[in-house]
Image (cartoon, rainbow, N blue to C red; front, top):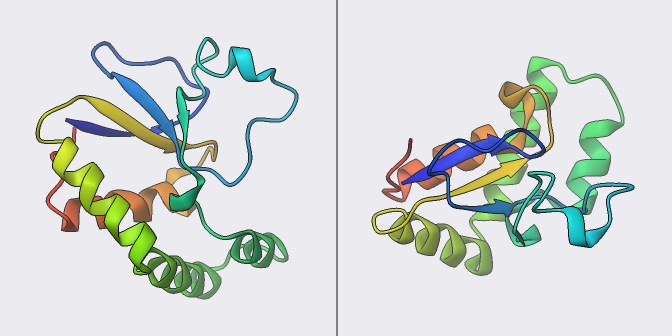
Length: 128
């Protein structure tokens, strides 16, 4: 089963491997402490929004129209072959293993992880 989580929060029982789908590692945290501090065990930036898209969304306040544009652009990035193959792989793995994917954002409704959840669900992922 696959969980979509906020990185840096305490792990749930049975969560399994935690995958960071973020563009950058956590600031000020030694690499050796990523897993111990509940950030992630494995870093998978391919499923993070591109650096350009992240810079664009941070330029201004996130309005509903801006979020809609961000969502469309992120989905287009995830439709590229490398990301699409990873989404399909994670969806298939979720049928056999427990793991989590996530991002640092506090508000999941304005974070790519909410979109990632939709994309994984569309691929047939078994979601918690």
